[in-house]
Amino acid sequence: MSGRDDGAPRPLRIGVVGGGSWGSALAALLAGKGHEAPLWCHDPEIARAIERTRENPHLPGIRLPDGVRATTDLPEAVGGADVILSAVPSQFVRETIGRAAPHVPEGALVVSASKGIEEGTLLRMDEVLSELLPETTMRRFCVLSGPSFAGEVARGAPTAVVVAGRTEEVAAEAQRIFQTSTFRVYTNTDVAGVELGGAAKNVIALAAGMAHGLGFGHNTTAALVTRGLAEITRLGVAIGARRATFYGLAGMGDLVLTCTGPASRNRTVGTRLGRGEALEDILADMDAVAEGVRNSASVYARARREGVEMPITAEVHGIVHRGRSPPEALTALLERDPKPEEWS
Image 1: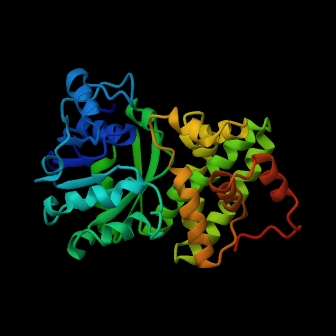
Image 2 (image 1 turned 180 degrees about the horizontal axis):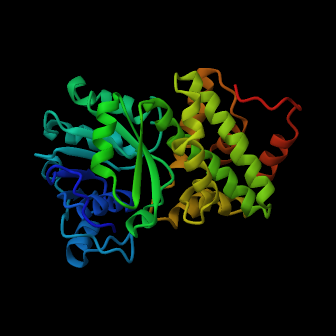
C-alpha cells in the first residue's frame, strides 16, 4: 500500500459497506492514508477473521491496516461517517443501504463502488440509492469505477480509475479522498455512463471467457471487446450518457481488464461455461460474486426496454438463462447479416 497522502486536510471516518475483496481493498487504501475505515461485513466469519488475523480470506496475503476495523453492526459502520462507501454486490444494494439509510449522517459524501443494474427495476445504482436516501444526501453522490482488480489495488500496483459526481465539486472531493501515489483518480460528471460501463462490461466478459473456454484465441477476444464496447455505447447514449465516457477508464479500460485478465471472475465463469460445465456447478465453487451472471438478465432487459440492439448481450443472456450452448451462440453472432461498422 502507498503511504499517507497529506493532501487530505484531516483524517476522515469512512464507513465501508461490503466486506468482500473490493470493499476490503478500498478500506485498506483509505486506512493507508490515515483515515478510519470501519468495514461492515455481512458474514460474521469474515469479520472475525479480519479482527483475528488482520487479513480477509477473500483477499489473501494482504495485511489490512489497523484503521480497518471489521464489524457486522451496520449502524456502527456508517454512524458518524464523513464518507459512506458502498461496495456490496449490486443485487444487495437496495436491502443493505436501505437498512443503513437511517444512520447515514446528513452531509456525508456517498460513494458507490458497486457495479450493476438492479434486477426487476432495471435501475442503476445511483437510481436505486435515490429511492433510499434524501435528495440532499444524493447531491453529494458519486460513483467510483474503472479497471481495478482488488488484489492489485491492495498490493499497490499502479491503477487508474474514474469518479463521477453529479457536480464537478463533488467528484473533485472524492478524488482528493481516494487518490494516492499508486491509485490515480480522474473525475467525470457522467454518472449514468460510468455506472453503465461498470455494469455491462461484466456481461461481455462472460462472452470473452466462453470464447477462451471454447479454445479460441486473441482474434476472437479482440472482436468481442470491440463489438461489446459498441453495443454498450449504444445503450449508454440511449439512456443519456456521453459517448466519450465509454472510450475512457469506465468503458474501454474496465472492459479490456475484465475480458482479458485471469483474475476476472466473470471471465472465469465464462471460460468454464465454454468448456461445457454447468452454471450451477460453477457458482457453487465460487466464494465471490460474478456480477455478470445476474446482470446479463438486467442489462438485456434494459436494452430491450430502450429499443437498443445488443447481440452479444442477447446471446450471453440466452446461454445463462435459457440453456443455449456457447457454440450455438457464437455461430449465431458470426452468421448475422453483414453490415457497416457503426458506433451510433
